[in-house]
Image (cartoon, rainbow, N blue to C red):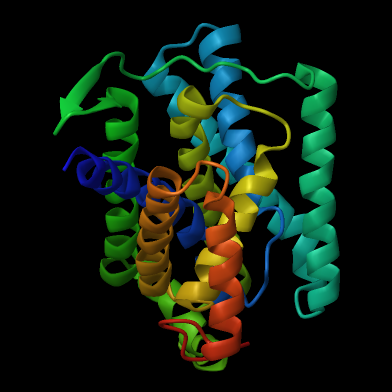
Length: 286
Protein backbone atom coordinates (compact mmCIF):
# COMPACT_ATOMS: atom_id res chain seq x y z
CA UNK A 1 0.00 0.00 0.00
CA UNK A 2 2.85 2.37 0.85
CA UNK A 3 4.41 1.70 -2.55
CA UNK A 4 1.17 2.59 -4.32
CA UNK A 5 0.84 5.84 -2.35
CA UNK A 6 4.49 6.63 -3.09
CA UNK A 7 3.82 6.32 -6.82
CA UNK A 8 0.52 8.20 -6.56
CA UNK A 9 1.98 11.17 -4.67
CA UNK A 10 5.37 11.57 -6.33
CA UNK A 11 3.97 10.76 -9.78
CA UNK A 12 1.48 13.61 -9.39
CA UNK A 13 4.20 16.03 -8.29
CA UNK A 14 6.61 15.22 -11.13
CA UNK A 15 3.78 15.02 -13.64
CA UNK A 16 2.60 18.50 -12.69
CA UNK A 17 6.15 19.85 -13.02
CA UNK A 18 6.65 18.22 -16.43
CA UNK A 19 3.31 19.64 -17.56
CA UNK A 20 4.31 23.14 -16.49
CA UNK A 21 7.55 22.86 -18.46
CA UNK A 22 5.84 21.44 -21.55
CA UNK A 23 2.78 23.70 -21.90
CA UNK A 24 4.93 26.71 -22.73
CA UNK A 25 6.89 24.71 -25.29
CA UNK A 26 3.78 23.44 -27.01
CA UNK A 27 2.08 26.86 -26.75
CA UNK A 28 4.72 28.66 -28.79
CA UNK A 29 4.67 25.87 -31.37
CA UNK A 30 0.91 25.95 -31.63
CA UNK A 31 0.82 29.72 -32.08
CA UNK A 32 4.00 30.57 -34.01
CA UNK A 33 4.77 27.19 -35.54
CA UNK A 34 8.35 27.15 -34.25
CA UNK A 35 10.27 24.60 -32.20
CA UNK A 36 12.09 26.66 -29.58
CA UNK A 37 15.25 24.85 -28.45
CA UNK A 38 15.95 27.69 -26.02
CA UNK A 39 12.92 26.68 -23.95
CA UNK A 40 15.05 24.66 -21.54
CA UNK A 41 17.28 27.71 -21.08
CA UNK A 42 14.28 29.64 -19.73
CA UNK A 43 13.82 26.92 -17.10
CA UNK A 44 17.51 27.24 -16.23
CA UNK A 45 17.47 31.04 -16.14
CA UNK A 46 14.49 31.01 -13.79
CA UNK A 47 16.42 28.82 -11.35
CA UNK A 48 19.61 30.89 -11.53
CA UNK A 49 17.85 34.23 -11.27
CA UNK A 50 16.03 32.93 -8.19
CA UNK A 51 19.38 31.90 -6.71
CA UNK A 52 20.85 35.31 -7.51
CA UNK A 53 18.02 37.30 -5.98
CA UNK A 54 17.41 35.07 -2.95
CA UNK A 55 20.91 33.95 -1.99
CA UNK A 56 23.30 36.56 -3.36
CA UNK A 57 21.19 39.72 -3.12
CA UNK A 58 19.18 38.60 -0.06
CA UNK A 59 15.84 39.71 -1.51
CA UNK A 60 12.75 38.13 0.07
CA UNK A 61 11.52 34.88 -1.47
CA UNK A 62 8.21 35.98 -3.09
CA UNK A 63 9.74 39.08 -4.69
CA UNK A 64 12.78 37.06 -5.86
CA UNK A 65 10.51 34.49 -7.50
CA UNK A 66 8.47 37.19 -9.23
CA UNK A 67 11.59 39.00 -10.47
CA UNK A 68 13.09 35.75 -11.75
CA UNK A 69 9.94 34.90 -13.73
CA UNK A 70 9.47 38.40 -15.14
CA UNK A 71 13.17 38.68 -16.00
CA UNK A 72 13.09 35.39 -17.89
CA UNK A 73 9.89 36.38 -19.68
CA UNK A 74 11.60 39.59 -20.79
CA UNK A 75 14.59 37.64 -22.12
CA UNK A 76 12.27 35.35 -24.04
CA UNK A 77 10.48 38.29 -25.62
CA UNK A 78 13.79 39.89 -26.64
CA UNK A 79 14.93 36.63 -28.24
CA UNK A 80 11.71 36.45 -30.25
CA UNK A 81 11.81 40.12 -31.25
CA UNK A 82 15.46 40.35 -32.25
CA UNK A 83 16.57 36.76 -32.83
CA UNK A 84 13.62 34.97 -34.43
CA UNK A 85 11.26 37.52 -35.96
CA UNK A 86 13.04 38.21 -39.23
CA UNK A 87 13.55 34.53 -40.10
CA UNK A 88 10.50 33.02 -38.42
CA UNK A 89 9.38 31.10 -41.49
CA UNK A 90 12.80 29.47 -41.94
CA UNK A 91 12.49 26.58 -39.49
CA UNK A 92 16.10 25.43 -39.73
CA UNK A 93 17.27 28.93 -38.82
CA UNK A 94 14.93 29.01 -35.81
CA UNK A 95 16.24 25.65 -34.60
CA UNK A 96 19.85 26.77 -34.94
CA UNK A 97 19.44 30.23 -33.38
CA UNK A 98 17.42 28.98 -30.41
CA UNK A 99 19.92 26.18 -29.77
CA UNK A 100 22.70 28.77 -29.97
CA UNK A 101 20.94 30.88 -27.33
CA UNK A 102 20.57 27.84 -25.06
CA UNK A 103 24.28 27.01 -25.34
CA UNK A 104 25.21 30.67 -24.89
CA UNK A 105 23.28 30.89 -21.63
CA UNK A 106 24.81 27.62 -20.45
CA UNK A 107 28.35 28.90 -21.04
CA UNK A 108 27.49 32.28 -19.52
CA UNK A 109 26.29 30.61 -16.33
CA UNK A 110 29.39 28.40 -16.29
CA UNK A 111 31.54 31.52 -16.45
CA UNK A 112 29.61 33.48 -13.83
CA UNK A 113 28.59 30.81 -11.33
CA UNK A 114 30.95 27.91 -12.03
CA UNK A 115 30.12 24.30 -12.91
CA UNK A 116 28.86 23.23 -9.48
CA UNK A 117 25.22 23.19 -8.45
CA UNK A 118 23.82 26.11 -6.50
CA UNK A 119 21.46 25.42 -3.63
CA UNK A 120 18.39 27.64 -3.70
CA UNK A 121 16.53 28.43 -0.50
CA UNK A 122 13.27 26.52 -0.10
CA UNK A 123 10.10 28.56 -0.19
CA UNK A 124 8.75 26.47 2.69
CA UNK A 125 10.60 24.10 5.00
CA UNK A 126 9.59 20.82 6.58
CA UNK A 127 7.73 17.79 5.34
CA UNK A 128 4.53 15.88 5.90
CA UNK A 129 3.61 12.21 6.00
CA UNK A 130 1.18 11.10 3.29
CA UNK A 131 0.15 7.48 3.68
CA UNK A 132 3.55 6.52 5.05
CA UNK A 133 5.47 8.58 2.47
CA UNK A 134 7.53 11.59 3.56
CA UNK A 135 7.01 14.48 1.14
CA UNK A 136 8.63 17.89 1.54
CA UNK A 137 6.41 20.95 1.65
CA UNK A 138 8.47 22.35 -1.22
CA UNK A 139 7.37 19.49 -3.48
CA UNK A 140 3.76 19.91 -2.42
CA UNK A 141 3.97 23.65 -3.10
CA UNK A 142 5.50 22.95 -6.52
CA UNK A 143 2.58 20.65 -7.36
CA UNK A 144 -0.04 23.26 -6.47
CA UNK A 145 1.81 26.10 -8.19
CA UNK A 146 2.10 24.02 -11.38
CA UNK A 147 -1.62 23.26 -11.28
CA UNK A 148 -2.51 26.90 -10.66
CA UNK A 149 -0.26 28.18 -13.46
CA UNK A 150 -1.67 25.74 -16.03
CA UNK A 151 -5.22 26.65 -14.96
CA UNK A 152 -4.46 30.37 -15.22
CA UNK A 153 -3.00 29.84 -18.69
CA UNK A 154 -6.15 28.05 -19.77
CA UNK A 155 -8.38 30.81 -18.37
CA UNK A 156 -6.20 33.51 -19.90
CA UNK A 157 -6.46 32.02 -23.38
CA UNK A 158 -10.19 31.33 -23.17
CA UNK A 159 -11.44 34.39 -21.25
CA UNK A 160 -9.25 37.41 -22.07
CA UNK A 161 -9.06 39.49 -25.24
CA UNK A 162 -5.32 38.88 -25.63
CA UNK A 163 -5.78 35.18 -24.96
CA UNK A 164 -8.49 34.93 -27.59
CA UNK A 165 -6.17 36.72 -30.03
CA UNK A 166 -3.49 34.13 -29.30
CA UNK A 167 -6.01 31.36 -29.93
CA UNK A 168 -7.14 33.03 -33.16
CA UNK A 169 -3.59 33.28 -34.51
CA UNK A 170 -2.98 29.64 -33.57
CA UNK A 171 -6.08 28.51 -35.47
CA UNK A 172 -5.77 30.67 -38.59
CA UNK A 173 -3.21 33.45 -38.97
CA UNK A 174 -4.71 34.89 -42.16
CA UNK A 175 -8.19 35.14 -40.65
CA UNK A 176 -6.72 36.70 -37.51
CA UNK A 177 -5.02 39.39 -39.61
CA UNK A 178 -8.34 40.20 -41.30
CA UNK A 179 -9.83 40.66 -37.82
CA UNK A 180 -7.21 43.31 -37.04
CA UNK A 181 -4.91 41.14 -34.93
CA UNK A 182 -1.16 41.75 -35.29
CA UNK A 183 0.53 38.32 -35.41
CA UNK A 184 4.03 39.59 -34.57
CA UNK A 185 2.74 41.21 -31.39
CA UNK A 186 1.02 37.96 -30.47
CA UNK A 187 4.19 35.96 -31.12
CA UNK A 188 6.21 38.16 -28.76
CA UNK A 189 3.55 37.94 -26.04
CA UNK A 190 3.30 34.17 -26.47
CA UNK A 191 7.07 33.76 -26.20
CA UNK A 192 7.01 35.79 -23.00
CA UNK A 193 4.29 33.57 -21.54
CA UNK A 194 6.14 30.43 -22.64
CA UNK A 195 9.38 31.64 -21.04
CA UNK A 196 7.57 32.65 -17.86
CA UNK A 197 5.97 29.22 -17.44
CA UNK A 198 9.35 27.50 -17.88
CA UNK A 199 10.89 29.95 -15.41
CA UNK A 200 8.22 29.18 -12.80
CA UNK A 201 9.15 25.51 -13.08
CA UNK A 202 12.83 26.37 -12.68
CA UNK A 203 12.23 28.65 -9.70
CA UNK A 204 10.24 26.07 -7.77
CA UNK A 205 12.32 23.02 -8.66
CA UNK A 206 15.68 24.65 -7.89
CA UNK A 207 15.32 24.17 -4.10
CA UNK A 208 14.71 20.46 -4.76
CA UNK A 209 17.31 19.66 -7.45
CA UNK A 210 19.71 22.64 -7.28
CA UNK A 211 20.57 24.96 -10.16
CA UNK A 212 23.24 23.66 -12.57
CA UNK A 213 24.32 25.04 -15.97
CA UNK A 214 23.28 21.86 -17.80
CA UNK A 215 19.76 21.66 -16.39
CA UNK A 216 18.30 23.18 -19.57
CA UNK A 217 18.86 19.94 -21.48
CA UNK A 218 16.84 17.90 -18.97
CA UNK A 219 13.81 20.15 -19.28
CA UNK A 220 14.08 20.39 -23.07
CA UNK A 221 14.15 16.61 -23.48
CA UNK A 222 11.14 16.23 -21.19
CA UNK A 223 9.25 18.94 -23.04
CA UNK A 224 10.04 17.30 -26.38
CA UNK A 225 8.82 13.95 -25.13
CA UNK A 226 5.62 15.38 -23.72
CA UNK A 227 4.63 17.38 -26.80
CA UNK A 228 5.39 14.45 -29.08
CA UNK A 229 3.30 12.13 -26.91
CA UNK A 230 0.52 14.64 -26.34
CA UNK A 231 0.56 16.15 -29.83
CA UNK A 232 2.43 19.20 -31.09
CA UNK A 233 0.49 22.38 -30.38
CA UNK A 234 -2.04 20.74 -28.04
CA UNK A 235 -2.14 22.11 -24.49
CA UNK A 236 -4.61 19.40 -23.49
CA UNK A 237 -2.23 16.80 -24.88
CA UNK A 238 0.68 18.31 -22.95
CA UNK A 239 -1.27 18.10 -19.70
CA UNK A 240 -2.26 14.46 -20.26
CA UNK A 241 1.21 13.41 -21.47
CA UNK A 242 2.97 15.28 -18.67
CA UNK A 243 0.97 13.47 -16.00
CA UNK A 244 1.39 10.12 -17.76
CA UNK A 245 5.14 10.63 -17.97
CA UNK A 246 5.38 11.65 -14.32
CA UNK A 247 3.51 8.58 -13.15
CA UNK A 248 5.33 6.22 -15.54
CA UNK A 249 8.78 7.39 -14.49
CA UNK A 250 7.90 7.22 -10.81
CA UNK A 251 6.46 3.73 -11.16
CA UNK A 252 9.58 2.49 -12.97
CA UNK A 253 11.84 4.11 -10.39
CA UNK A 254 9.95 2.61 -7.44
CA UNK A 255 9.09 -0.82 -8.84
CA UNK A 256 12.13 -1.60 -11.00
CA UNK A 257 15.17 0.63 -10.54
CA UNK A 258 16.07 4.29 -10.11
CA UNK A 259 18.47 3.84 -13.03
CA UNK A 260 15.74 3.37 -15.64
CA UNK A 261 13.20 6.24 -15.43
CA UNK A 262 14.79 8.17 -18.30
CA UNK A 263 14.21 5.16 -20.54
CA UNK A 264 10.47 5.71 -20.18
CA UNK A 265 10.20 8.88 -22.23
CA UNK A 266 12.57 7.53 -24.90
CA UNK A 267 10.49 4.40 -25.35
CA UNK A 268 7.30 6.49 -25.30
CA UNK A 269 8.62 8.78 -28.05
CA UNK A 270 9.49 5.81 -30.28
CA UNK A 271 6.12 4.11 -29.75
CA UNK A 272 4.12 7.27 -30.40
CA UNK A 273 6.07 8.18 -33.53
CA UNK A 274 5.57 4.68 -34.90
CA UNK A 275 1.96 4.09 -33.86
CA UNK A 276 0.43 7.61 -33.72
CA UNK A 277 2.75 10.27 -35.19
CA UNK A 278 0.38 13.12 -34.35
CA UNK A 279 0.35 12.21 -30.67
CA UNK A 280 -2.59 11.64 -28.36
CA UNK A 281 -4.35 14.95 -29.03
CA UNK A 282 -2.55 16.30 -32.10
CA UNK A 283 -4.80 17.35 -34.96
CA UNK A 284 -2.57 19.26 -37.35
CA UNK A 285 0.99 20.12 -38.21
CA UNK A 286 2.55 23.37 -39.36
